[in-house]
Amino acid sequence: MTEFGFIDYIANLFAHIPTNDFEGIGDDCAILPLENGESLVFTADLLTEQVHFLRHATSAYEIGRKSLAVNLSDVAAMGVRPIATLLSIALPSDLPKGWAKEFMEGYHSLSDEFSVALIGGDTTRSDSGITINVTAIGRGSSANIKRRSDAQSGDVIFVTGELGASGSGLQDLLARKFDTPQAVAHRNPQPQVTEGIWLGAHREVHAMMDLSDGLASDLRHILRRSKVGAEINTELIPIAEGSDLQTALCGGEDYKLLFTVDPFTADPLIRNFHSHFGTPIYPIGRITEGNKLQWLRNGSPIETDWQGFTHF
Amino acid sequence: MTEFGFIDYIANLFAHIPTNDFEGIGDDCAILPLENGESLVFTADLLTEQVHFLRHATSAYEIGRKSLAVNLSDVAAMGVRPIATLLSIALPSDLPKGWAKEFMEGYHSLSDEFSVALIGGDTTRSDSGITINVTAIGRGSSANIKRRSDAQSGDVIFVTGELGASGSGLQDLLARKFDTPQAVAHRNPQPQVTEGIWLGAHREVHAMMDLSDGLASDLRHILRRSKVGAEINTELIPIAEGSDLQTALCGGEDYKLLFTVDPFTADPLIRNFHSHFGTPIYPIGRITEGNKLQWLRNGSPIETDWQGFTHF
Image (tube, rainbow over all chains, first blue to last red; front, side, top):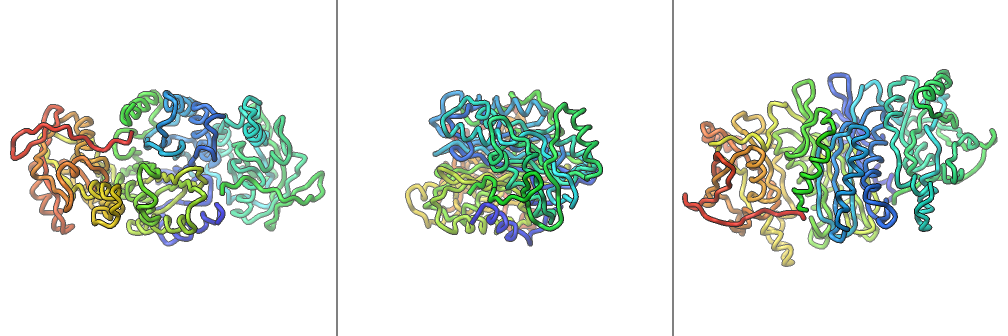
């Protein structure tokens, strides 16, 4: 069973249990509307040694920072502010003295940057590798929440930054090249918290999600949930320095935002974003009717079997 | 550094970050008061293979059920109703086919029993053992929330059931006696969700928590946070069949509730609880001034070095 097959199995198994007001599985976060016009959002990510990070290739500080970053990115992708996390860590007894403290310093530095409280969690012993679970909670106006299911035919598709650095960095790490700029980028993702909140407040932004498994995989979630297709102009993909088109589309963990915008307001949004953040957003294609993801090169269809990273 | 020393270190490291309205680390759950007179509560527990369960001694169904049970117990200990969970699981590739589905069936059975929604989580590969993290969310009237910090001198101390079965069952499992009633109890804890909600609605119940590490350890949290002491009448401890006093006090994972009650309303509460649930609550001692935990046998002090289970 694939990862997404298993998630569908779980969703079906639980379908008859009351939702208790939650909008659950299927987006970057689950959503709980409150009575005051706000909503809370919830997400969890589990990181395991060897699969998500290599102890010899990543400092404890970086692992602490990254384990939070990937969750803050999910909250930002909903268009709201992260307010708190719960952190669970299982630590083997053979860790160097000070590892846990250095991990917490990394976790703390990013918590501090975005004023995210640490409200609970669990610490325990592991008989095998390091395992980390972070649950993040976000809060914001219900009107600002962005879902994967709200893309509309004709929308312009944007990403908030260059893609592929993390994927190329992972290739470098696996080749034991630890100090390339791409390897450093892979170990130190910066969640676009401020950008996500800003985009959340803009009504012309329709669907949004974060890029964790790679555009070629992640975009399909928006298409499936919005019941639309897309054309992507591959020559418009902003490829990070030292990376390449396939890695930019299929490598994971860039943690940029992917979103769709009403076509009549796309140009002003480009200008507003740039004047607010000093960085561009990149139009890369268009939402279409139907359900097909079509890659284009200079306007002509190209056939590929691009997929993103899968965890199983 | 001990488990609780590390938690103190973390709490200090994060002390300067805004709480964002949460009442955080230090109780069974963190608390978020809402504007409508309700509060949400949050807790997380991480279970790792070998440390929290033995794959050869516990079925996938039981592990699924237990990983939820320990979290529902924490929510119940706050006096409110569990409404949702996020489940993260890391699974090694050598698991028997069907293990993940059987795990989910166990998780589902207990979710269904208490109408708890599954709203998200993460599934990933593990290069070592099975790891499970559950984050549980509860909701109820803010007036019903029970904290560890609200015990008052003179309160009668109660537990909601017999103690020691789980601890004796763990000893059986480690001796490869898998089918004793105690071993079955250890693998199948029943969280006292209905009892916790009922006690939450009673104003005469002051402090409450669940018994996860053993009374000798857990009670100290109430004493420390309430700045009180206690006298425990060891002859009043309800010892589960097949267990003994030391295991009842120092063994973990019974998941009964420990709570303190205004002495003038203790007798009617005993009667009300019994008429509502058909089972007794057990008075085992009294909260005192000072900060000492004193064990008594037939009224006379006894000296022991009883401690509960620690995870480091």
